[in-house]
Image 1 (cartoon, helix red, strand yellow):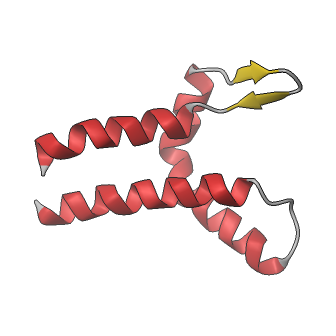
Image 2 (cartoon, one colour):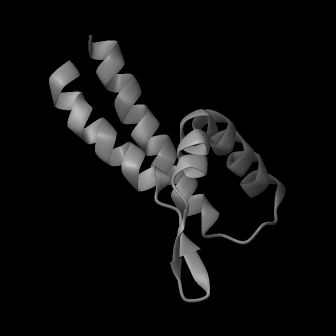
Length: 82
């Protein structure tokens, strides 16, 4: 059971890292490798959710709610499972 809790915590950290990396402009081999790694590790959950729930328009930009929804869901499920 502890392995599941650790995996959930790690997944939340991966999502947070992906959000932070998304704020940096493309460029640099390290950053692009990190971006691809984080996308590969999290897209299997965020992608379908992003397709189901459109981004919220905020003037000239949009806010992707999928990371927020997944993190909140993990935070709600973790106390039950762990």
